[in-house]
Image (cartoon, rainbow over all chains, first blue to last red):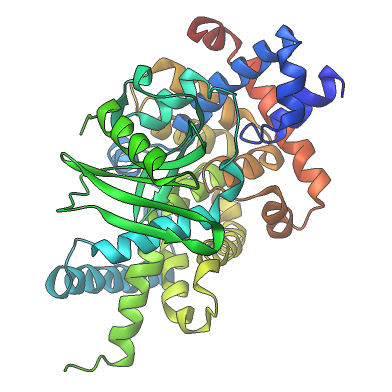
Length: 236
Length: 173
């Protein structure tokens, strides 16, 4: 594979790093540098796209009055939709427990693994620092000295919250790690995906909780859980 | 035991399945149309249509592409109605004023300006991949393109962005 082809593939999907890239990059400092630069760019793209929705209303208040030109039926349907949303919110506040049950949370975590199995691979490739920082931003600080290679980092929607999804390499293989700030648990919740040969826990960690899921031995899993808990410092 | 009526059950399903996607739908539509007011209309319409037709969603795991399909269709409809009112240059600066500088980070602001500067054909697949997490296969289906075309657009979009924010990337590095 030529440098040009490899860079084109990386730019099509920077999260897709395979063995071919690993082999090439080990002997090609230029492509490694391109990859690092691409990851810095990707971190900026992620932050730029994921703007604070609430800030738009404030920023546009008093700006071009296009709203005045709305046709009446749009106003009508918008009002109906707003009514529906208000009703839903009212219902949610009145009749539901805002905290997801531990079992439901475990199901969401397991379901997320099925959404992104491709990220769960053995790799020596360290995720770019800028991308990791972007993913952790607003959620947690991570003491990398406590961990082995963090090979994947992405912000993911799990149980209605955008949270950091990491893949951390353990002694016996990779682990999916989800950091869930603000999700307080009384005790550890088991995660079982026996058909995939995976197991893990959602473990309480101060003012949040952490899901760790992998295919290693129980001792390796426990070690990984302890390491991640020690390495995480919630920032919200 | 309280038995839920059809409307309550639908509200329950709406809150569980659709409501969590509202902010991301708004982001997606705003990047698509570059106009906060238009984005607001499209998202309201999308939520309303999703609420009405939620019973027809057979596979809950397909909620994201289902919502995106509705939003794309609504965007096309609303845009068609509003096209004569829209002034491209004014709208671009209006949207830029609304979006850029919401963060107070000049690197992010510059990247936003660069994303605004991309052609629609390049911007949409990038937003679908990075913001919404769709695979290139799914993006191809949604946009009615071959996967190869999507890959080319993604590659070119990132290449253009890296060129436009070159100095920021040098500094971060």
